[in-house]
Length: 575
Image (cartoon, rainbow, N blue to C red; front, side, top):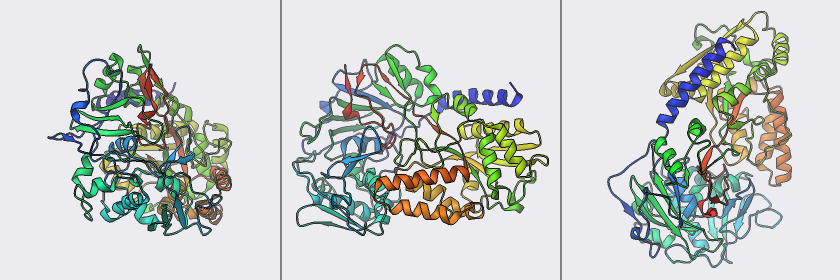
C-alpha cells in the first residue's frame, strides 16, 4: 500500500471521529408551542418523551435538529421543518413510496395529456379535488383551499422559503365551474408535476385556520402557522415542546389509509445519545449517517437499512473558463487544459472509485451516469457510467492528449475535513500513482473560503469538489450541471469543450418540454450516453443513505425523493 493510501485512510479515521462528534446542531427556543386547531388534540394527550422504552402505541423518532418553522409557506428547503410537513400535510400529487412514479394525492388523478388534464399547449393543468376530505380543524377540503394555499405562498414570498418554485412557474390559479383546481404556467415545463406539485411548499393548508389566526401579510411570516399545523394528512399535530419533541396523533378522520401509530419526534442533537437511545429501545428510529454505523452495527434489536441513495452526487468540477492569471502559481496547466474531451475522459478513467466508495463512504453508496441520480425518474440502469478505475485507458487517453511525457501540476480546492476533501485526495493519489509527472495539489480550506471561491465567476481554480444540490426532477440537474447555457455551463464555459454543445443543449431543452414520459426517459438515456463520452464532471459517487431502526418496525419503506429522513411514519407499525 502506497504512502498516499495510508494518508487517505488516516484522514478518513480522523474524519469519522470528527463527524461522529459534531453531527447535528439543534435549534432550541425558550417557550413551548402547542396547537389550538379545533380538535386536533392537546399536549396532555401525548406521552412525555425520552424516558424508558418507546411506547407500544407510539412511534418515536430521534431527529438531529429542530425545525425553524413548520409552515409550508416559510420552511426552508432541506430544513427539518420539511420532515414534519410531510407527515401532517398533503399535496395534489405525491411520490409513490416505492419509486419515482407519481400517484394521486388530494387530486383524484395525476394530470396527463391522455386523460385531458394537461392542455395541448402544455400550459394548463387541471386537478380534480378529492371529495370527503376534512382538515384537522374539521373544515372540508375544496379547490378554494388549494388555490388559497398556493396564492398564499406567492403573496407571502418569504426569502427563506421555496416560494420561487411557485412564483417562477405559476402564471395564474383558478377554481373551475366543476370545483377543480386549475393552474396556468408561465411556460411549458415537463418538470412541473415532480419539481413543483410534490414540493413541501405546495402543501395544502386550511384556509379557515389561517384566516382565524392572522391571515396573510405579504412578506411576513404567520406566527401561528409557523408553530402549528392544520392539514389533511394521516397525522394531526398535537404539540411542539421546544428543544424537546414534536408530537402527533393518528388522524381518525383521515380519508386514506390511516396511520398505525401515534408519532413523537424527539429533538436529540447529540449523535451519541441517539445511538444509545436506539440500542436501549428508547427510540424506534434515529437520524443517522454512515459515519457512526460502526457504533450500531451488530447491536441487538437494531436493523441498518442501506439501500437508499442521496440525490446529491459528490462531484469534481472541470473549469473550462480558467482565469490563467488567477490560478495558483504552482499550476502548470494551460488555460484550455479541460477543453479537450480526451483529458476529461482520462481523469474519469484514472479515478479510484472503489477507494472512495469503500473507504470514505464505508460502502454506503453507488454510482450514476452523467447526470441523473439513481432513484430518480430518467435514470437508465443500462447507461454507461464511470465506476471502475481503468488505468490502461487513462494512460492511453493522456498519451493521445499529449500530456503523458510532459506531465502537469493542477490544484483542486475543497472544504477541509469532510468527504469532499477525501474525494480530492483520492484524485491526487489516483493520478500521481498513474504517472509521477502528474501532480495534484489539494487545497483544503475553511468552508467560508471555499464558498467565496465557489461563488466566483469565473472560478479561480481549475477544479473544485462539492456535492450537487438535491432536486426532484432530472431537468434541474441537466439545466444546472450539463446545459452549456445553464448555470455551471456558463460559469465553466462548457460550450468551449463540448464536441457538440448545440446537440446537448437541444436534447436537454427537448426533454424539459416532453410530456410523454416514455419519450422523455429515452431523451435522458441518450443524454447519459453522450455525457459519458463528453463529461464535464468527475462524479466520485452517489452517497448512500444509512437508516437505523429497531427490528420490530414493520412496513419500513424509504424514498430519497421525500424530505429527510426520507420516510412517512404513517406507513410504519411495530410488532
